[in-house]
Image (tube, rainbow, N blue to C red; front, top):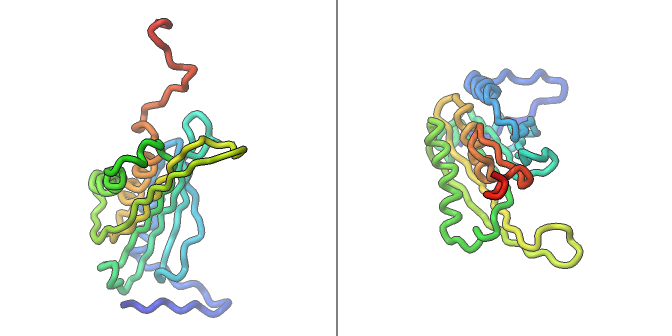
Length: 205
């Protein structure tokens, strides 16, 4: 297993990025998320790999940017010497958190469906990968008293990691953003949800 790179002494120049890691970063930079998705660079974990980068993501409501529908993190880990557990040099780590329909908590197949969001998105984006694993967690909450929130709510968390093949990390980030959008309940790109006041019934026609 590759040894963790030692920290450089203060004042020493930073090491040059490996070409494969640099290519992966450049590919990530080409991804253009849909308007509801806000993406920003965040501090990356320092102890998981010699080289790493992290992106924070949140999904705003199409009608109200202040309302958050889902949030997540996409982390790129790179070890030029290879990593036994990854079976490769490049590992992607994704985390998604979103509120969902409270009825979903009683659906025994929901976890399998939520996991398929990731596996299907990776396949559809053409992201070559292997050694994918993770968890889907559902948390049901019931609020009482003066807490200003829906009485019942269900949160879903998807934690996953997989080994990327090649440096086209744009495909992997695109797949991750697709999962985030599905978890947030966003409509397909190009389709806008109508607000309740915009909907017309039979009597309005």
